[in-house]
Length: 446
Ligand SMILES: O=C(O)C1=C[C@@H](OP(=O)(O)O)[C@@H](O)[C@H](O)C1
Ligand SMILES: C=C(OP(=O)(O)O)C(=O)O
View (cartoon, rainbow, N blue to C red):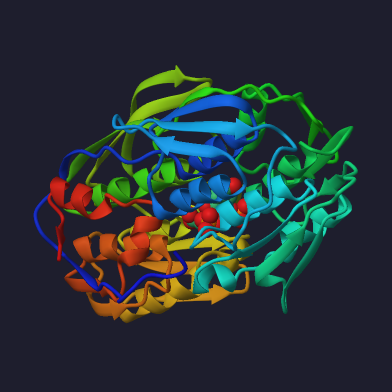
């Protein structure tokens, strides 16, 4: 799990128009949470449409290690027999979360208020990412963390034997930190309170309520205040995972920049805490329409239709929109390179601590492909070269980062000369069917 074998280079070159339907996999955030909340319920949770990417499979394995029974039937439905809140057993071995920040941080939260000890590790990317942002609030519940210098994995969490509830104001916009605190609060008696000054994806709050926990969300002068009553008995659920808007971003963006394209991406969740990219693309003048808007399981869902948009213009992306599109900046920068004028992206320092430093990874690769990029600690700007104007002709580094690999492959589909990524293997963490899906639409990937 901790790392892939030999790097797998992949090359994208300009071909004909992309057309057809793109059925993207299940939402990664909701998939992790379905397994974890299923494991913390008493009885059987059934999950349809689970993302079977490496990140989520690592979480499934971790839930087994903590004592839940997790199986997949022949029809592709997942079954989780949970152990209940407070029921986690101590894993016999190190928990390897692979490449998944969401997985490791949420699981640390979920086990931190049980009297057990667990050691976590991951691949080289995950071992370089900061965990102090999670272990600091977990200490308020009474948990202890021993990791490498700088709060890096491998790290051992000693769960609190007499947990107390916590009140915590998030110092950065992070749904992972918010979720870790709420999951820890599940096994603390009394009320745990998390306050966020910028709204981040709200799947944990929604799903906790769906599993029967008492969760209250209030918008106040302090920010968004989430209050959870500890030690509920979670009721198992039957879950249909919506398709992932962050994965849909790739076929949508490719359709916008490849001449003559017309692609339909059905059934995409439009939860406003995730939809920032699509708003931004429309602000740039993208021909992007929502068809068949409906409500499924309490979440807004639509079919997205994207058509080639040669007249897009650069814009200033509102910083307050950042949290609702945080994983989409790499692919946005590819669209921006194919628009006219400059696109500025500010208030995005979180991009520096993802699977890679995403500002640096994109800036270096875009420059190698002939695009001008300026950057600072928490901002970057891309000078658009107009439709089809990117020279390309570069080999770029994926840096163990699926979104960087997919973004540069989309760039190559529209640039004058091919773009090669040095390693496409990380794509399997979140979008294992990416290559087949894109070639099915007409993309040339070899
Ligand atoms: O909670 C989640 O499911 C996620 C939260 C975001 O991370 P941060 O909490 O670090 O912003 C996002 O980048 C990640 O892909 C998924
Ligand atoms: C940041 C991401 O994931 P994670 O933090 O779970 O590794 C992502 O998928 O873009």
